[in-house]
Image (cartoon, rainbow, N blue to C red; front, side, top):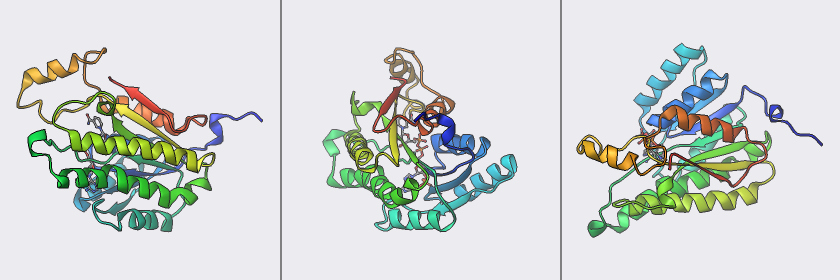
Length: 243
Ligand SMILES: NC(=O)c1ccc[n+]([C@@H]2O[C@H](COP(=O)([O-])OP(=O)(O)OC[C@H]3O[C@@H](n4cnc5c(N)ncnc54)[C@H](OP(=O)(O)O)[C@@H]3O)[C@@H](O)[C@H]2O)c1
């Protein structure tokens, strides 16, 4: 049997987790502009409303919003129920924060618990909650992870540990949910560095560690996310960019 990319029709309906972040907004905008219906989730309801209004003005279609804190135990079930209640789902993009600085001298149990809950436990449970719905439509999941999992950097043990757990968990889920649901990841170098303003030389120093010698742009991340959503012969893969 010959399979073609066009077997996954556009428009599709996509959930974006961390939709109000710098990369989440770019992904939501790209999916909406290519004709998709988007569902936006993050904590801040006002920001979600503003983004929904902007995208409605730009595309003529109003996204659905689902405000929820991923630290709440019921977040995966709540978000999944809200999404499915309003229609079928084809794609999920996992792009949630935070990026806490956790100097090793002060690393605490709470730091590890928080990052594991937001970056690994909640996304993995959400994908699992949505698995049967995604399976009906040959669904795809793409998660944003961090090149620091392979090549760690200072002051982020909690965050990098959680991203490592997310990667392992999603690769295991990719095996469990194949062949009806595909899960892939984009492992990024730096798009934005929160500490760059305080230390301008830092930007140069960090950018020059990458062979391409610069930080990436949200649009370059979006390009890879869209490609993996459409990559019908890839699952459990990690595509590294900007590192
Ligand atoms: N930017 C980079 O250079 C870079 C590099 C490598 C990897 N990444 C990864 O790429 C993804 C997106 O990065 P970004 O720069 O766009 O992040 P960002 O701008 O900090 O946005 C984070 C998003 O997550 C949401 N969020 C944070 N805590 C949450 C919680 N407890 N519950 C629900 N939502 C929560 C935020 O909205 P609310 O505050 O309203 O909840 C926001 O929508 C992240 O997974 C990040 O680790 C980014």
